[in-house]
Image (tube, rainbow, N blue to C red):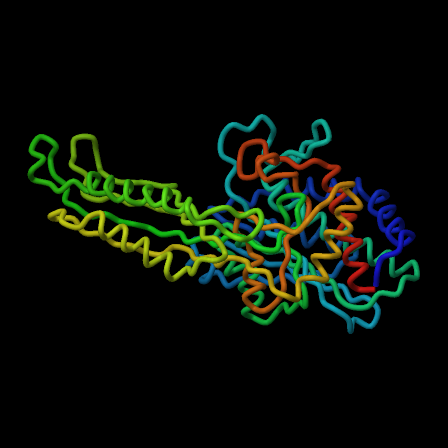
Length: 416
């Protein structure tokens, strides 16, 4: 159905009446750390479940087996599923997914990263913007349409909340685990958003580890060693040179530019007076939706191998650490895209359209299972404005309020 103005006003009023509760809910979520690594995320899931149950929601807690979690380099994961049937429950099932795990806070904070403090209309804390805020957005939007039905509206279908804890390590033990075990199967999927735009596509990501092997030797007699760092420098220069070539490739998806390669971690050597025998490099290659991951990986392996060709005593090992495919729009996403764009434009008072993002997200895992996925939720105008994954991460409370209204309206329209 097309949502009429009276119904939209009812939903907006409910969100306004319960907004203080929503803010307090988000504060409680921020106050339980979910730093990943180390990735001990079950305590946060248990606290979230307790809060949701206090609202009258039935919560399923799905603990991922510890051996699987440890094999992934984490400590504990418990994924949450909340199922809300409306009417006969025979209509669409719309899943709402947000992740609770987040990178450690790092340095430079002027606010307590676990305080959930509010200053000048902004709520500060690690994961306040990415993406514990959408635990709140999605929960209170769901409660708003439950209240709408209780007031006599005719709704039919299901809303399911998927709160997961493996996005930072790729999502395979978060949404991937729920999907693999047949615990969730939505007709449409709405994932946490990071900006005002409705996101229908995103980049893929390939992360790799390059280990350059030489031979340690005393710096006083350097000829007794084989310098792995000098060889690694050639590898680095060759990898960075690729970025010049990547700038010549452009995505056709609005909001996505060109591919990019970043070296984010380097370790090697044993001491200042020792010729370094081993150097390890970890790189991140962002892939536009038009690229083929297998071709990208093969090309990086070729660049690394060519860089050390002819260097005596040098060998190189290359290992894939993570592969996240790009999110490509599926044709069935149009009802969700249209509803979100329409209501976001109305609530925010500006034109909000569908776009892409250079980030990668868990939404791709649903798309790979044939479930049309779209990203939208509480976010700033741009990711940069929220300090996401940086010091003093924050969210504007009015953005939280308005995004909750948008999601509630879209759900009501799609389930009417």
